[in-house]
Image 1 (cartoon, rainbow, N blue to C red):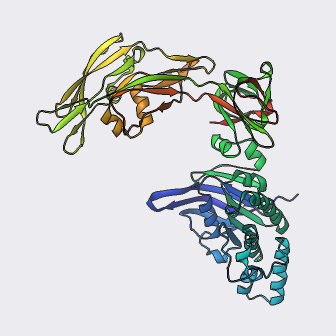
Image 2: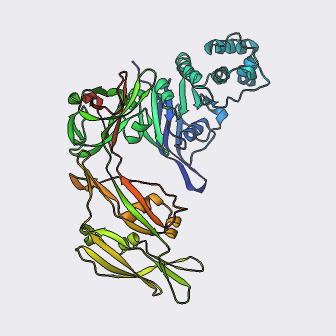
Length: 524
């Protein structure tokens, strides 16, 4: 079989809009003759910009667009051998179906006989024979879209560009048109370049999918390759539903996650390389506990018609709750009233005393100084303290650049932490003090709460390996009053989504089974 040659080549395409907004960051992509290629990604990823560059509606900041061996980056749209179908079909409302399709041919001054032959051929192709005299404004969305496609194809372009053409259709019609578009592409035998953010559309129609994010191509491959062997966490999460678990590639065909080694089919990773594991919901089976490679409690069961969608908590999250004591403004004012300084008492674990430096103490105490008239901040230029690695209370004095001081207490404690052996996690946080003003002025409350409470989580087997911490609270930071509030810090735990035709009860302990070929290993 003769190998198809690239019809379109994007070479290092960079696109920068106003305010140095870099939309495309060095795109390199080959599109073959007679190929159905889909540019897939979330809004703002650059897919439509790339399509518009190919169509000639935008000129790239850098790079080449090679079409059939010729650089067309500066060629106007009407001189390019391609046509575009947009989401809004842009049909001429004053022309009937026949005249809409014939419009481009009339511009080329073709004879009436040839125009008639070509239009009737297109009507047959799109399944609208007998509709030639129909008013396009009285047609359904699907019919209008077919007319727009016929109008583009009748000019016999080498490439048809489609910019989310199914976006305006309802779900049922959209699914029908996916198959219809693929049929049309195969019959006319030209290259289709299709833009969408709908994963199902891409998987259904494409010969090749180009997954994009933030102006960068994440992966290029067939629908089967993209789905079964995603190159990274973004692709796995964007293409279909995935269970994504951190793991360690111990050696070829052996991966470790959930503190257990499993056989897999992946190779060519470094030994003990941190990786991400993908387990697709449809590849997992619910089995008796004793037969499961993983076990957990059924958290929820949703009936989806053809199957049940079951969520099983395989690893419970780890949490710790502390008290936040909110007090009135805690500050010192200079004698002339022009300056203020404030700071809070805080707790520190005895094992962390040696690692505390001035910056950490200022952050933990939320120490700051400012001019009262302008609220302009002054620097904290001096700290005085004598901390020991012993339980007790120690005084610390914060002094501003102008000499204004405030004294606060650091309580050194032997803080206990919460262990979760099943999750191989530990988590710790401290009670802390805050003023009403500090809470109201907080810019990133979740991050600030973690800093104030020194909340941290780690793997029990390797304390140098941190675990992400989430925070939950039931107060409004902008309307908080003096009092004591509970703040809970927790890790995510692990839930597995499973698709099964068998019903299972919520709350039941179950096993989860899968084979080596169901484990897909990705680089971090």
